[in-house]
Length: 368
Image (cartoon, rainbow, N blue to C red):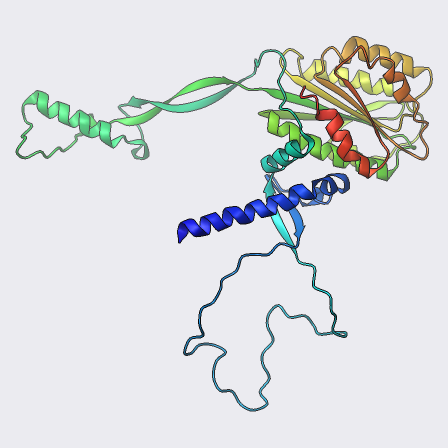
């Protein structure tokens, strides 16, 4: 019976995950689950799922709700009935269930659907994490770690050595000196870490719709990269004509005005790398989002700084140009001039939310 239930549960979970995978592009492009994320799971509305239920046997001889009843006595309403307002309809209801999915499962689905390769961290994994392994025996320790087999073996050895062991009456009573406990050693392990930079133009030409596109894409990028690295550090940089390092909440809410000078953001990112993330120890990812509007004389300085400073230390530098009714969209043309010489530079043009899915695949599809 237990095996049957477990098999049915596994099958049901496979059906649920199959429906999520089927609609993954819609979830990605429109951000339906971003507001439903917790610490470790995401709540996803999945329609048209038949929930397993008990099948009752034959009617018994008694119980609540049974009996002859009196003439004219109304039947009680069920808990799940509606209010009964309006005429009867002939269409089936739309059943939607909230399904909890872990971020690891979500990353796996994303990888399968987008055919994302696993990332190979660059350089040496120089940052060490300490892991305790219970692989030794100690003469002291808490009762919860007492090793019963070793304790009785030690007591047996003691009695045999002292000549007190009686084979015809093999009763072993361990003493305090016989007690043995599991113990551990601390083993340093390589720990691959990633520093992720999100850079966004917040000048007046970037609307709330463009920022929503950035927020959705950043969520999925985070989900994938967290599945590839033990440690993730994020930094957020916003800029108009001047760049500032901000927290995540400010990154998505701030609205500025004035001109645009992208090079100020590049210099700010470089300062943070030098301060917090030595390139020989960290895998560095930079995701920049803009509508492509930049002060004309600044674009040449940007491409030079990218080529000389940021691209040599970054695993990936991804530029996403979001279509805006106000921005000129010219900056991506300047980046295309250095694209061929830098295989870690990836460019994406995002016309609307429907372009998020393809942009993520373009950014992460190289496995760098």
